[in-house]
Image (cartoon, rainbow, N blue to C red):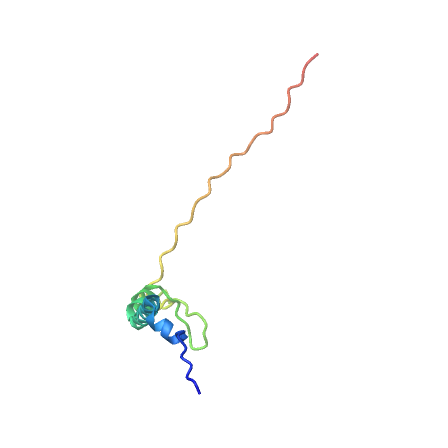
Length: 109
């Protein structure tokens, strides 16, 4: 029996010997590391907790209905925290002037 020597390199040997394989592998590894760093960072993904508490919120009873304000007390019971939100300024629309209908002049013949 004769031994047959195959001179063609296998797919694995071709990939290992190619420099583009190492470049692609490096890019994949850096991308994965970058994604893992981004997920572990608590600052980027969590909402700011102080911004939600500054928004005024209506107070509710145990049954879920709104609590009304007691005008006899200084505190505003209708809002959590005791402060009502500022009212938004409304735009005033200019009043339209009444247009007089003009009648055509009669020609006197």
